[in-house]
Length: 171
Image (cartoon, rainbow, N blue to C red):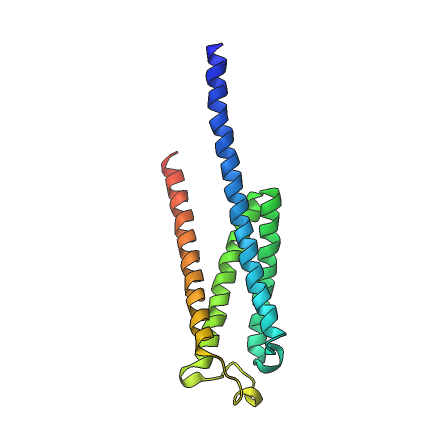
């Protein structure tokens, strides 16, 4: 009788730990879906409502479409991770999320350089350069969020690497 009670008491915390881990996994995958969706929304808005399709140089439009493809793939694999809790989807989603953050930061760097210094409006078609103005607040805002995104990628990467090293040390 006593042994079954202790076995029952031991199982409850294990089940609770598994449940909490599952909730964290769902939260992480949902955060990736949300982040990629925000980037995708901003990219579509840039091309349509902000007339990026007309004013941006062709090479910038190509970069924008590459970012959109990465965002869409990140949403797909993060959603698969969210609903199926697949380790393969988790790995792909985390990599795509990192690629999306890095690629977006690269595009923001182009945006910032195109608004300042000797390269003013180099990312805009020549016929639109004279009338292409952006409030400096948005330049600083975009740069700050991109830096935070890159820092987030670095922190998550270091966390995962530390977890891998600790997992190997415990074996």
